[in-house]
Amino acid sequence: MGTTGDIQRVRYRFIGHVQHRGFRFACSVAADAAQATGWVRNEPDGTVIAEVQASKEGQLAFVRRLSTIVPGLGYDWSVAHEEIVDLRGGEHGFTVRRF
Image 1 (cartoon, helix red, strand yellow):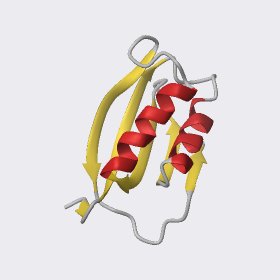
Image 2 (spheres, rainbow, N blue to C red):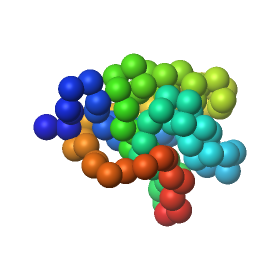
Image 3 (cartoon, one colour):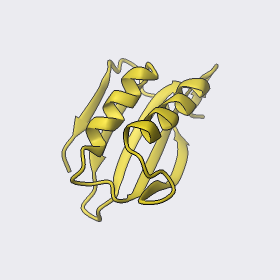
Image 4 (spheres, one colour):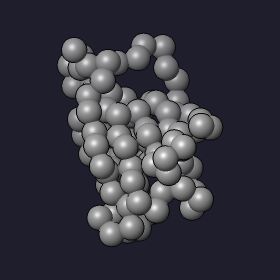
């Protein structure tokens, strides 16, 4: 469940200083650089959720790129939770969603 070959879809929950600083846009840039599809949205509790579908290397590239765009990984923001979820077919690109 959740993976096909090397592609996986991971749901990330980011905590800390992740809203009102362009974090969702940074996720979009990082996902594009990692050749990933998926989406990102702010949550009412102040966290940010993102689902990223890419190769395992793409997942790592996404988090690394995000940490260079939005400094502070481990200090003012971090990944609180990540889990592998079912793949989504027919998805094109990475979208920024509202609540």
